Amino acid sequence: MVARLQRTHFSTPRSAEYFSAPELEKQTGQPQTHFAAVALKELVDNALDAAETAGRPPEIGIEATVAGDALHLVVTDNGPGLATETIRRILDFSTRTSDKAAYRAPTRGLQGNAFKTVLGLPAALGTDAPVVVEAGGVRHEIRAGVDPAGNVRVDHGVTARPTGCGTRVALALPARGQRLDPGRWARGFALFNPHASVRIRDGGALDGTSNLRNRPARQPAIFTQRPSRSPRSGGSSCRPTPRRRPGMTGRHCASSCSVTSRPRARERPA
Image (cartoon, rainbow, N blue to C red):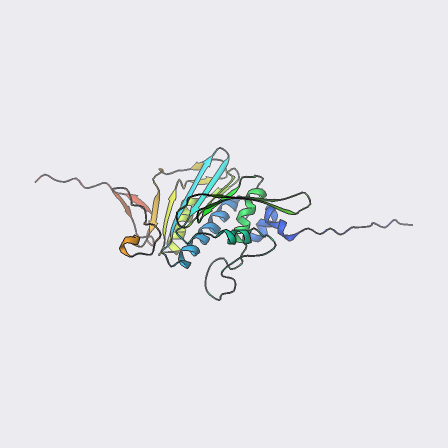
């Protein structure tokens, strides 16, 4: 008589897929080496949407720095600020949260799972570094992951902290193995969003090691096709675009999308 194998069916929450690198590859359509680029794109997309929804010309800030073995990404915007209640809804990994899914319009973020993938990236890459969100006078420190049974565990710390307008999101990922060219992304965002001002600091390319290659000076590069409008002059921006250094000229983004330094012409004696 042949013994029959008795199998037991196990059920695993689908929400755990946000914390698995192979599953995130399927959701994002990108390999693990591009997870940092996925995070940067999703955060800047959200930042552009936030400012546009508030009726403000977007002013986007990007920072990409390496400290030790960690790649630190920071994205800021001049939108209305991510509400605490919205963040709590996003942290429910059994649902999708979007303010665009029910509208028929050309827009970003229709699926409502982009920010969830960003929250899952640190755990999927083997780090417990928190994702930090600052908006509306509140600082959120979020650590999310799964236990051995596959159940999602979220540690959400909330503290009061003075903030400006808009939202600031910061996260840290392992630098080794990631390929990222933040400067190229910044130029691309400015090219396809000519109404926006995109500012980047320390945007050297990450080539899979723990070093940013060809790192520029710490003075931020600014890509913009529109004149800066301050609230005092009747503009709708939350804060004016930072001034360039003397001698810095922003070329038209459609032609070169770069910021170049030109020497000042010497005055000739009369």
